[in-house]
Amino acid sequence: EAGVTQSPTHLIKTRGQQATLRCSPISGHTSVYWYQQALGLGLQFLLWYDEGEERNRGNFPPRFSGRQFPNYSSELNVNALELEDSALYLCASSSWTGTDSNQPQHFGDGTRLSIL
Amino acid sequence: GIQVEQSPPDLILQEGANSTLRCNFSDSVNNLQWFHQNPWGQLINLFYIPSGTKQNGRLSATTVATERYSLLYISSSQTTDSGVYFCAVAGDAGNMLTFGGGTRLMVKP
Image 1 (cartoon, rainbow over the protein chains, first blue to last red):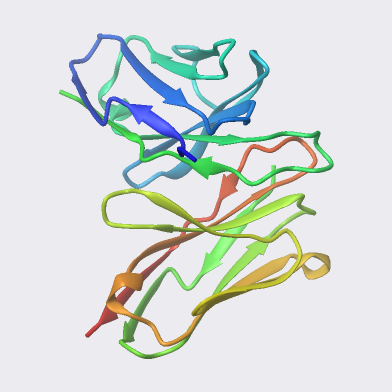
Image 2 (cartoon, chains in turn purple, green; image 1 turned 135 degrees about the vertical axis):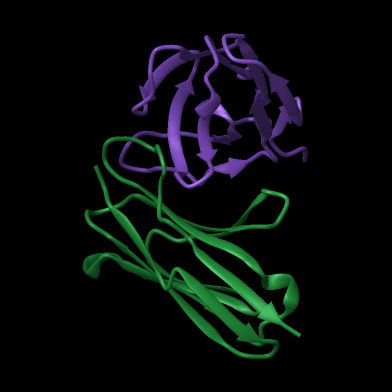
């Protein structure tokens, strides 16, 4: 069974540009989560999509956005890139049966975004 | 939101030694996971353990949900165990994981 796949592995951009990161969940998983791991800031929740809808977002500005497609894959878009957006972006997937029965998340290998 | 604290922040062991990593959380949880992040940044699932005890080879974990803590035991450590160990939890608000600050483990040969 294929795991969570992310692309690209590395991405180099300059300030002000836009970046698009992609994620394919494990087959059968409907929920996709995005996390940011910036140096010195730990792992922080960014966005959660399930069945094509945004279910929750973390404490990030609106220039961080995304979407989930009918096949449950997802894109994370970051507009107007800033130097502090340099980080490892991790995608995870899970099945989801409701808030009283959270399911384990499985992570991809991440996209390392560098802003010059 | 839920607060997660891990201890110790850093740990240096000699190969073959045993260790215990601790995770304290501030509220009831529906999801608790332990991960190992290797030097390449990959997050490896170790345990999904919102309550109870599990074992997988040299690793085992126990979560006492009523007292809001979880322990990860590593026995007979190997150099390949080096890396950062994260505890992450989710509660009633949804399955978004809140991560602790991690325990950085170095196992020396």
